[in-house]
Length: 189
Image (cartoon, rainbow, N blue to C red; front, side, top):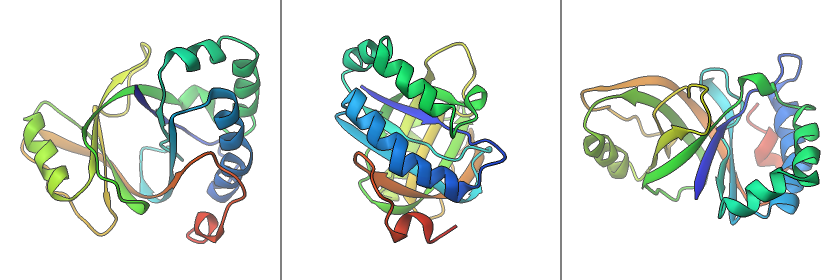
């Protein structure tokens, strides 16, 4: 199972402070407590992604994470989230991968909605060697988009008919459990 979150930071915290806290404290904690199969953070460097600071991706069996979140591990994570997130603005979605680009480092994140041909959009992202996920909300709160794509930063997508660009920004992708941030984490802010 794959999920994607839309994480907002409090206005009093800078993006650099947010990323540093996320990478040095929260990501290692979440990795230890939840045991994701795979965990990637997409931290916003520039652009407009509808006010979100990070778009993390999680791969898990779902049951293990749900059980952990129902107990003491979930309490510990929720307490930590209050230290660096604007939680009322956060959203979470079940992600259905359509294309699976593998590029690391700087990427463009593209938030899209529409009722156009899904295969046409997937083909455009595939040609860019990007990643595309269709999104379904985990709860009743609306998501900011129906699809999210990640493509190499230099690539500019031309969306097919019926699809609307809602937000675009450059992100830094960091894979793994987190830890001390290297120069690549803070150099672009």
